[in-house]
Length: 152
Image (cartoon, rainbow, N blue to C red; front, side, top):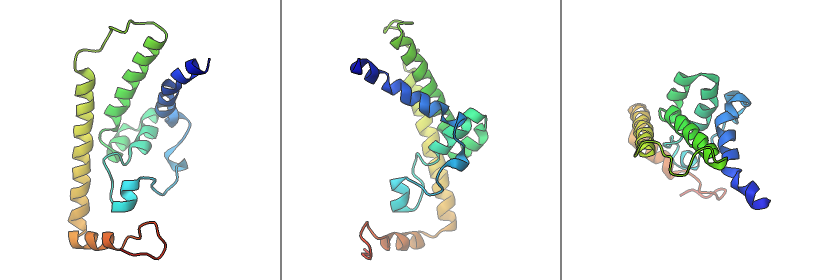
């Protein structure tokens, strides 16, 4: 019984991720970032904006989601395909031999990574066009590393 329940856990989390935007709005999220990369380096990582974008997509705000992270809509669609396929396999609606066209997941994942990486480079270009590199590096050196009063 427990092993069967555990086997449904990935599907449950995918449904939560894809359907969260129907129940939670972006305004209900905390205003501080939980991203470790952003807290250390004081700039966005490749995945920054995905949570907010995934909350906007079910509400139909695709352009706003793309502004947050360009790869979010593609990744969202990839998750939907994976969820549908997993449900079909779980309930024996298709055989395990059934696949999307060869290389489908690789192509969509690659497209998503290209969009996310390109968007990140654009963000870095905008950031460093308004902040000199020397100012950024000086700010990094003064970051306390988890010890109160200790500056490196």
